[in-house]
Length: 228
Image (cartoon, rainbow, N blue to C red; front, top):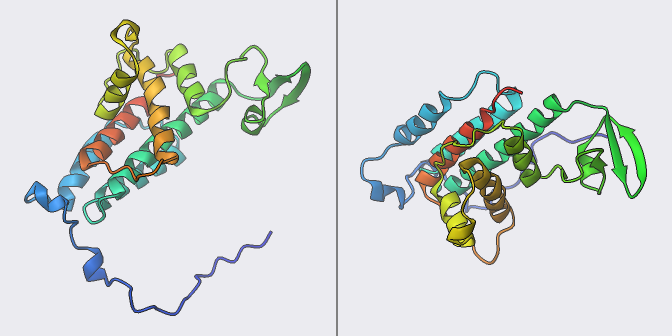
């Protein structure tokens, strides 16, 4: 199939913002006083130093985009929320990669009494097929998180940096049901937050710079999975 990769040159409307306008600090960021873009970058870069050198290139590249989105939140506040979302999706990408590494093909798949052997996995899982002997694993984000926790790839006492995850967990469950480890809390709440950002209701979620930075830290903690 042919794709047109040329840039679609359009006639200017007269409402385009010049670069001088685009690089003006967002009005909300000014409430932080003398905060500069370099200060935001430093928080992300400090977290990035903890990233394992064994992380797949595509996951590392996705995290770099999350970091840059967070930096540009200095100019466009909503980018802090987009940065957090991108960090969470990097976790899902890393878990898929880890699953494929730990459980390589071919896969014996079962569905309604039928059996087939496939080297490709994800599209079959999303249409109701299951790996033989792993009936509860459906390949989705929550399922990947549960798999990683059950196989002790995520430490049970992993730090929870992103406060939104703890607040969400506290609001959902009574005290009697809060016997979960930190890893189990993350397995519940990270996919839930990702889904909330993916499927907004009647308002746009507006998060702050700290949420983007803490989400980046959280992603790196999870993505630094233990060896198999």
